Amino acid sequence: MIDTKKLDYVLKRVNKPARYIGDERNSVEKDFNSVDVRFAFGFPDVYEVAMSHLGMHILYNLINDRDDMLCERVFAPWEDMESLMREHNIPLYGLESKEEIINFDVLGFTLQYEMSYTNILNMMDLAKIPFKSVDRDESHPLIVAGGPCAYNPEPLAEIIDLFMIGEGEEIIVEVFELLKDCKMKGLSRAEFLLLASRIQGVYVPSLYEVEYNEDKTIKSFEPSVESVNPIVKKRYISDVEAMYQMDRVIVPFIETVHDRAVLEVFRGCTHGCRFCQAGMIYRPIREKSSELLLKQADDLIASTGYQEVSLSSLSSCDHTEIDKIAVNLMDKYVDEKVAISLPSLRLDSFSIDLLKQIEKVKRTGLTFAPEAGTQRLRDVINKGVNEENFVNAVSSAFENGWSRVKLYFMVGLPTETNEDLDGIKDMSYLVRDLFFNRNKKDIRGNLQVVASASCFVPKPFTPFQWFKQNTADEFYEKLYYTKDQIKEKKIKFQYHDPKLSILEGLVARGDRRVGEVIISAWEKGCKFDGWSEFFQYDKWIEAMEENDISFDFYNFRERSFDEILPWDFIDINVSKAYLQKEYENAIAETVTPDCRRGCNNCGIEDCEMWSVFR
Image (cartoon, rainbow, N blue to C red; front, side, top):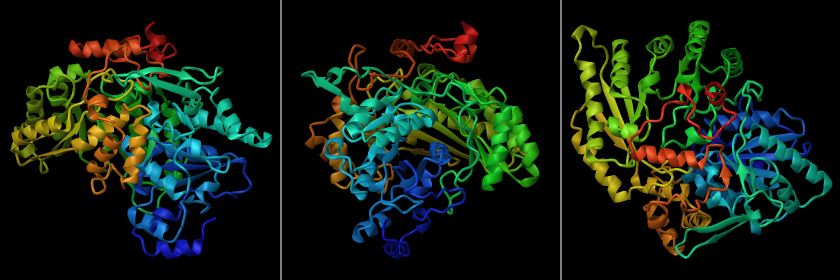
């Protein structure tokens, strides 16, 4: 255990000490030495971001509900806390027991965002754990990782001992039960990793070798041990009704990014947007019943005291019983002033009746994501919404008293032209016109329109994984062009940093060689790269140059269909042939219909859509 007197001294000198003390409502403290497997769940960002992550709460409660295991939390300390920890020689520790992380059996990281990887290194350094697997021995915790970015694990292949590919509820228990058994039998780390590689969804990088061609592309990627499967098949929960159901979450002492209870209504998505990695890797669609969701909502509200419940999924309005769920929740909790919220709404699933139910307690701004400014480009990306959907949705919102609207777009999408950029302005101005071109007696509130543009990043396991990314200069040119078009004071145009986006693109589609860049960037002082006040683009460029890594190779070139991609050894159930077909449909501006209208043969044969339409 760390020196608590030192910790008390330090906590009196940092901003938001509640980030580092634990002991919140619904947190779990166990005897550190009375369990067989001790797991530190690491989220490589600050407390307020980490505590808003639903997956952490699920795995935390799942593991702590067992008598033979414990899960504690560990997050990236903010700059003031880190400085004092280093000054006073306080190593990274678990929030619950205040035990040093190096004394845990497993340190696991959730990989939600590529630009958090330097924080992983920073946390390992604070824990006094060597970065590379080859430099660690039996005295060190196993380093594991999962999450959406783990679907291309290769940039962290020399750092992480074991990746869990897919949904974690089942796989993490199997891995930890195996670890418990191996500890009892006195098996080595290497013996455990070999056995673990046989579990579906587990990838152990040290058991594979990669060779490169002279042009730097991958020549081969093969297991170095004969018994290891060359293909790692993702893990997912087939029955979301029967899986572990969480009835509580930890309630922070301080405000977090999403300060509310989160209710996951289903997993997967049927829309098939071609830029969206989540829509591919989380297939197939699996809904929870309204009865189960209403019970979970009751449990979460009772155990937390939250005054807001978010109905969360990739496209929550697509749940076949979403109206029933929202109406029942509002009817039950309206007198207690418990609000219901939805994430950004798809224009084609917009329901004004549902919106009326939600606004009974709390009215907020509305967020829509048309993604592209013209119908042509929306067809390219398979967004599946049109201007009529947009006009109907926005008009209905204004008629019912809303006046704040946020629109999400992307720039740099494949085949994009200036006409598509003009469409961002046109859609924003259309919102203005729909608001004011009504009878004056019907106009309520002060119109606020925010048009937000992110820079497109091609991601693995999407039809756009072969496309080149725009350069930073190209992004800036498009963003400045769009900004200059918007002169209406009621419309605010904001955009993401292109330099951050191209670095995200580098890591997202990187291979093992990119790992050295991440380490070099950390050595130069990079951390919290997703935070503008910390981001040091020049340091990243220096790290790339020192390791002979270029944007030209990883970002700014088209990849051929026959090139071996760094993530090709992972099977997400969606076939590569389907992704290639969708790439070709994008070039042809051909729309692929929603899976709910008919099976599109993406490759998942046990999908509900397959059984319905085949």
